[in-house]
Length: 554
Image (cartoon, rainbow, N blue to C red; front, side):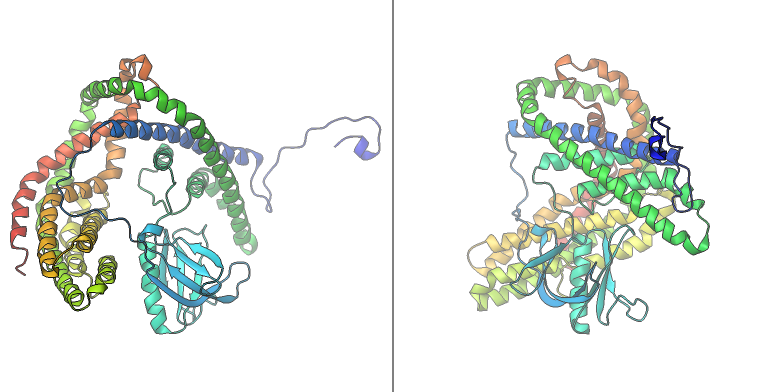
């Protein structure tokens, strides 16, 4: 305010008073500054690690292109992701601003399109939107309890309250049942489309995970939304934990508290999203400037780079030994030995059951193809679709799924207290997903085989059994890696970083901007972990795989 504002001639500036918290605006100026600093910390950490991740990915890409391709011992062919539509149909959807239910034509896309569900104003009409169901759960709507729902409805509920709830109304109970399974499938398997540049995607995943860990969130988060929204989610979680929760605790007036809290949360989320969009746009501009010059600089140094990394890894093993040694010993006692001791028998039983069920379905579809030769492409597509379900009557996964579920709820659950908080469900989930991938490859291979149908069946089963035996050790190892990933970060990677700091002095000057010690440490730990798992698993795996020779015996 000035004297001129009061009708006087000489301006005398006066500083505005500091903002203090009120009931309508319960955030003080100091608290707002604290929130902005938290947001800036996340943004800075993400931007730094994004560039490092992109750089590491680019170095690896150059190295991979310089190495000759190795012939795979696997006999099944690698398919392209299925791209045919899973289901189409017409029912109603509740609007967001205009909350009336309107009839829409829905198309459930396949793996190639990340299981998105598109909806149009009518069949063959204008695209109205796309649903990415990652991070959602699908269920039957209860119109008696939720006024927004309809009879025979479906509701998509997000994993956190910051996202929209979707409501749908089906024509009858039969349509509700059919589309509920489609939505559940999209929720389970759906994912956000990755960036067209794999290196940008690598940089984003690394940048986000490192920013998350720097804020004390060591457990894995699902990438269930666009990059900027993921960054905004992290920003909001940090602000909520460190500042906002204390502010909300002071809002105690019963009548208006809920309204004020919702408004405040919405404002903070908007602030986080704006900052996240700026961070994501900023790193994109950085990469555009970095990519060409960096690739030109790295390529001539490739042989020197490889030699330096081998030497550095040896030194890192020595430096980090006082952390990795005891950690791997503990890991062997609390996870590897106990789980392997009880896991191999049900895993082999599950694979044997899967082979039997797959052969039964293969024989049935082969009979159809023999009577209707032109049906082979559609039979293969349906076979691949059936693999996507765990408990569908025609799915070759149904018995295997039950065996692994019983293992998870029985023997594996008995180890929970000794497993130091590791996500045991992840071990079972990854085994089943690797099994599913093998069966999809088998169906694709069958589609590519030419010649007499019965001979193709025999050939395919021979290839599938070969690849199951070949890959079961890798499948178990991958499942272990997923099981202990969070434990590893907290108990090994983070403590070891301080120990390897002096190794920086060993990096040749020409490579200081290329070599990432933290990434090398992760590689070393992965090698140490792989050796520990192999040592703990090899005897059990070799003995158990022999049991697959009799897979046809129930």
